[in-house]
Length: 385
Image (cartoon, rainbow, N blue to C red; front, top):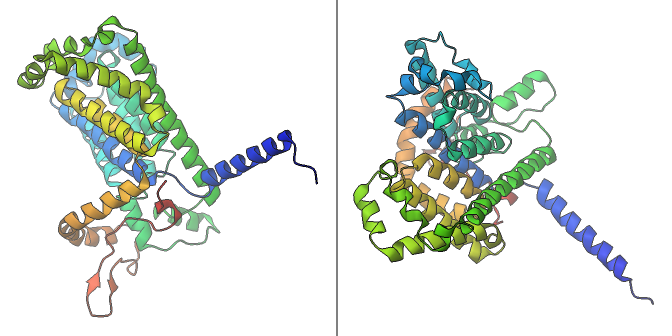
């Protein structure tokens, strides 16, 4: 019996890898815990930017921003034009507060898809009023939020997940049932399609982060100050980047700390993508990236940029890690969660579309009603990977 040729074996190998990739892409949604955490942290970043600029909102974005009119007239994006010149301070105040409210609802996971679109438009309409004061953190946050809108970001730690667990899906045989399922965050589109879209966008977001890290690290490596290990010393001497002068001075006082911080930043950024290929190296790279961004937040007064990067880095954390963390945090916060739902359940049950038999409380057979606090799905998506 003749042995299979090299070309035949190669073709079989290609078919095997294709089948594996197709199964990975379409059978389930990947990194749904990371996507949910990215939703929470990205929403907090939007809230943080707006709240910290609340006192100067009129000077920066409202009526007092006339100093920036030439750039406003040449705005690349259309959302800034939502804030028209005749919008008074009071009208702009309510608009500003409305966008903050949208960010809060996005964090809580209340109708995340619709709220997410409105929040992104509102956020861009405000921030892009002063493009001269923006930074790359704004671009990263904007791109990441846009990609999150195509992912399932409300599978965990969200009011949408709780609503889905407390309702039953209706057959998608009419406009009314489709709208009802959409409102209750039940499945409307075919599962293979939603899985494929989620996973493709997940790959796009991951690749975006890898390229950001690699390009930033590679450009650093080409600079003489980074090559000699002194680069981070100079920006940390600027008053604008010294929120805690005593901490900054304490770090820059020691040359070893400056050199170590400089080289670690380069190595982590350049090697981040390669480190993701090995489980142990991935954990080390993610930990170093988080510490890197936390140090930027503390030493360089860029908390919202750092929070945005940490939010999107969450998609690289394994599901098994999130499951362990989820169980631990639920055990610690169970009393607080019970108190919250005791207050929130009567309000939620009165919202339109809620049926009186849609309550999540069940009798355990001993006369004790116990609500289902977990927003964790059960199924293949919860397996490590």
